[in-house]
Image 1 (tube, rainbow, N blue to C red):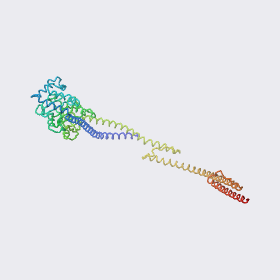
Image 2: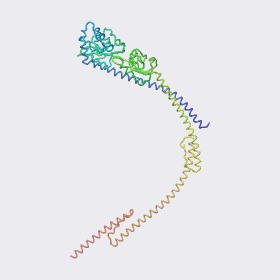
Image 3: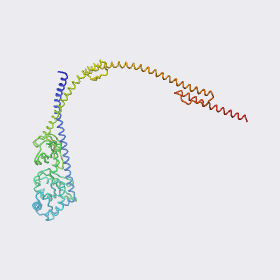
Length: 507
């Protein structure tokens, strides 16, 4: 088998071995990394839903306090409680007859009757009912209650069967509404706040309901309690957001018993207070600690889950973010298939590299043989490829390069000697030309000075030399002209003196 065949085959086998090991190691690492990423995503999602729910619930707390402190609320309760004793021995029966049994509006719309128009209670009811109804619809509450200090529910918006009953000894004395009333009425702090767990509330057809309550204090006198009945609809809208949680993931709100408070976004059934979760992580969250791990059994699957506590007033819930393990495993399988696909491409690339590598060995040898033949024929312009290689081929190329350089050096030496001979001859001619030019300049200077001196000898004191001489010889011209100028001045002075003497002698 030729080397050109052996080398690509060896490269392919090597790539297959490396690929198999890499895929195996990669899948293990990918599984661990994917688990970490899934838990991080779930933890971030649970925390995000908790923050949304916390803002929603805190807004309810602030609204309850503000409404209880409002003068309209205080006056409404004051007026209704003033009319309450005038309703007879059984106010509950009388008011339920007026506002429920004889109410012309169908069930679920009893709130549309603003007054039974019989006595002072109905007049007091009418004064505040429109405002409370508008507030209920704007805030999304299920019902609003005014409760006097004795526990009588003297007013509700919805007019269900809890209306006009007593929360201390009446049929709903064990409900969450009674619980929050008792705590709120016991406090003298206008900032106090009470709330309850979600429960199936009988007057509302067993629908999930939680209650919040604050005291109503007017001129430092405790009149009673304002309470809201909260449905889980708005919480459902918060926890129904499944973005980023795939096809099986969701977030749910769970109470301390492990029962769902919010409905599952992944089922068509009503799950609130009917479906539960079982996991030690719930106990951790109810204890105030974040937790993550697996939950088994919920929606007939095993899930990755992150659980965080949510505190609101007197209640602590758990926010659970989860996603099915099968869906996560499918992501790992998909990633594995991608790795295998990439590995196959790498094997092809490795085979191609092996072919190129074999060519990188055989082709330089062939090229080197050709270059040696050209060098033997006297051609030193040959290109020696691979001279920087560190293998045996590189050694061979460098050996040929030595012979080529020797031939080049020989030719350069011969050319240099010839160049020196040419340069010496050129320098000699240049020196002779320079000497001839210097001699000509000197001769010219001598001639010019000689002419000037001749004119001076003939008595011509105006014969200055005007034409500049070459180089340093021009200094002679300047000195001559200066001397001639001084001599001319001296002669002029002597001539003046002689003239003056002659004039005096003649006189």
